[in-house]
Image (cartoon, rainbow, N blue to C red):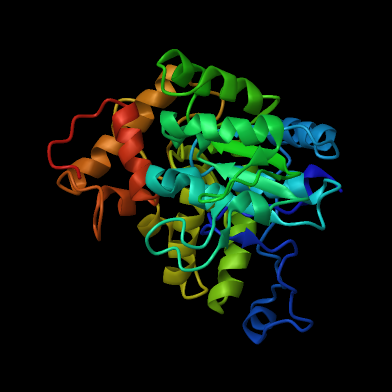
Amino acid sequence: MNAASMALDFIDTPDETERLSARPLPRTRPAHLARAGGSVVAPDRIVGGSRALRQVMQQVSAVASTDATVLITGESGTGKELLAKEVHSRSRRSTRPLVKVNCSAIPREIFESEFFGHARGAFTGAVQERPGRFHLADGGTIFLDEVGDLPIDTQAKLLRVLQEGEYERVGEDRTRTVDVRVIAATNHNLANEVRARRFRQDLFYRLNVFPLELPPLRARKDDIPQLATHLIASTAQRHRVPAPPLTPDDMAWLQRYDWPGNIRELQNVIERAVILSNGVRLRLDVALPRIAGPHGEPISTSEGRSDDVVLTDRECRERERANVMRALERSAGRIYGRGGAAELLGINPTTLASRVRALKIAVAKAR
């Protein structure tokens, strides 16, 4: 199976023990797709054959069959969770559970209970024993998402189970053993976090056995037409509406934008455009944020910058900063809620809040 046809899902899912198989596709073509001349589309796929994506998938092929710990890095919205699913699905543990833990969502007060479980009566409210995430993942894979957000005082507890494969439930003296493969993901630069003393160096080395870096969408723009085509078809199937065509002008417009929210933002834009299209014309003119030139000037859909212009990383960051600032200005400094900057950009509010801090944008009214 080549990189252009493998299955990946670019949508975040809530914390849960992941089902190992995709939902079965219907045997018959839905009527709305038959009328549109479409076909049944699997919602979870890797789409694209750019050099940047192929390089990542070649690394996945090399490491998946081993038990090596994998650290996936990349910006928010690039598909880190789904790359973890791909590694697991190709491993010898693929028939065992893949358990996701969103490290940023677990308060330090219940860290041990969530990861390792607790005995009945271990604390107020512990009316029955509860297995932890490591127990659920025994024999399979545990995916530590947003591992860079773990508080420093909880990291030593995680390090022990990663090194020794041993832990105790809260309220028990019995030492338990576990056999898991660890995949971690973060949008932080953990080496910088180590230097800033926000992340343990020994834990970083334990996780960084086989690093995989997912490129941002702006670094793989050759994949955008194929991604957009797939997202249009899957969105139309999900909402049971006719799929509008993707024209050459639409593709050019999509490729001119830098996608600070990456594939998640592209998906949100395509979903809005398909819903507004009535199956006739993809309404990117309504759904896509205004495209601006390197100095903030608007670009019409027929103009744009020349395809042979290569921007430096600094220029890309400047454009991203300008785009975020425009969204904040339009939303009167609001990040959250209806009409907030996050909604305008098509990204999660918490992601935008982190990006505002990283870009050093001072927004008095942002919350």
